Figure 1 (cartoon, rainbow, N blue to C red):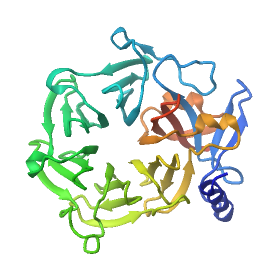
Figure 2: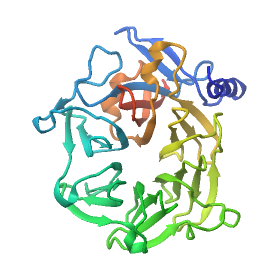
Figure 3: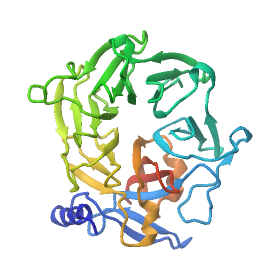
Figure 4: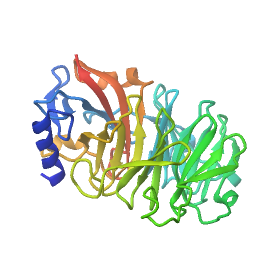
Length: 369
């Protein structure tokens, strides 16, 4: 058992709060084994629900999602190497870096379609995707060094790059939206670039002076990989080189950090995907510890899950080089069937895995009736 897991279990016992670990129980109806986090004596708060790769997933494997039917234009396969994930209107969007496409999985029809435009809108290495309320989508592409804006009809509407800021060295990775702004993390520029959504014109960077000395700029970003926004408009950036999550006001004012370097609960080694839920909880996946950590709005560690356990059957719930996470409330009914009897889902936690057979893992945060 790793130091990360041992520390997590000790903290559960000591505080009776939500921290790392898993517990399992049999499904009396199907013989399926349920996997929960945290372990007794704490009440379960997260359950592993299912996973899939988008191809002909064997339904005989316990916990797998139903088989997806791949259209003839995409008959070559399933999700290869996913990064960013987003969900809306019964569709799960997955940025597939190896396929150079965005895979779109219809959760009602159980079909997979590969969006791989050609011509001047051809994707190079799509990393993350953000969905707007009008059905349009923004895709960051590290090969093109751009953010591509596609309409709901999948036609290219526009491009964003760093030239508007007077630089050509940008490498966009994360993307997040408000009603009037686009936030795109720039790995090479060590900042988040903020654009006006209507005009696509640059507004400012976060931090305002990306090259400032760290001693005078505690909010300096080193490797801003992913970006997310909470309901108040605050900006959360996973800084992989700093092993921290850094939080800013919507106007770029630095507020505070979450985490530090290490392998204990509340610490990071390679933080990547980040998301917030309606309660202000913060979800961060770490590609090194291969876990997803949950923090409260103040940055206190609540729970960690995904690390392989001692029981081989727990591998279904293990994360394998996780890259991105999103939280969803609109599709609970679609996944409630995978919940244990008496476990009521409150929200879904969807995580992409860049390695292994389980490319997309779905967990449910909930409670026992």
